[in-house]
Image (cartoon, rainbow, N blue to C red; front, side):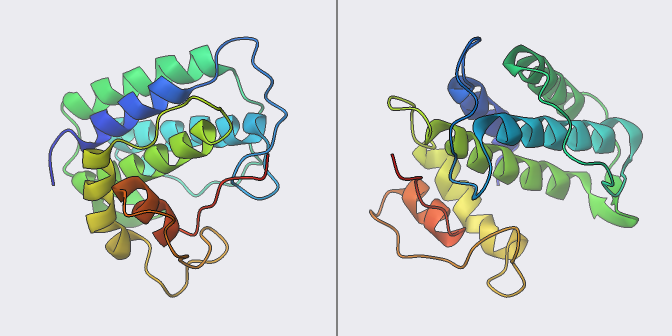
Length: 181
């Protein structure tokens, strides 16, 4: 696994964030979530990753999703996350009270951000797919991070990929499909 996995996932996320003034009320591949809700979740995920890398622990979430502070805020926090990863950080992070190597936290973060970036991209007609190299690398670790058993309610059962493209294979493994237009 390459050291720049999180960086590439953040770069993909930044490339598909909706622009200012975009309609955030449309559906996403996340059942029951609109774009605004998905952006709030992405913001929350970035905050948790930063909390782990700068404070050495990720606390159990107990709050409902915050209101999305906007894509400029998410851009700023995503860039700050890369700085947190590049700077000195703990070797191990307590995640919900259990020690996890920081490298594993970074990999989980890369998967989370890349897949939710695709969720955002799926709402746009001209957004790019997950880059092949990133998708291949995430697909190689996905079975360790998201096993077939016990994945509900976070992920659906795997589905047949529509193509052999690495991004389609990764998304199919995670049970993702595009929302109906």
